[in-house]
Length: 207
Image 1 (tube, helix red, strand yellow):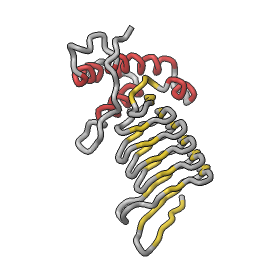
Image 2 (cartoon, helix red, strand yellow; image 1 turned 90 degrees about the horizontal axis):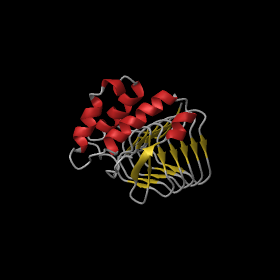
Image 3 (tube, helix red, strand yellow; image 1 turned 90 degrees about the vertical axis):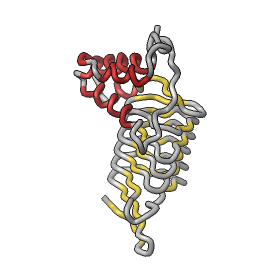
Image 4 (spheres, one colour; image 1 turned 120 degrees about the horizontal axis):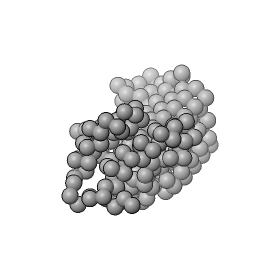
């Protein structure tokens, strides 16, 4: 682990091991001495990306060309972005998620999910990414069931989002799987007082 620092204003950047940072990428140091910008290990950061001050980047992420992260963004592990993705300041991007090309992400992306759009919306689970990272078929089926019950209810007009989320949190058959519990916590944490809430979704009628 290396730390680059300027003694005059005490702003910091920490970069881990085995990162591939390509041409014309900019990575800013922290905005103050009490914080630091952090890049973890084994990340691929392609050309002309921008990682602003105080971002926290985990491990094994892939940022395609022209991915732009504003200040204080948190990106967990195994996240993939397509080209020209923009993430608003203070957003959290959960592990194993996928951000579609040209997306403008202005709220949190929960773990395991896909988003896309000029104002990014949820578009289901990142099934391809989960499969490639070794999630079992049983885990993925359980995640799909939990996702549908929260975001694609049959009777969206009669039950609130909070009620649907709470019902899944109480479902012992689904929460038996750690991956489901992790996803539910990621959704719930996005509504904490200092967080931005989750990306928009449409109350689709599940078939």
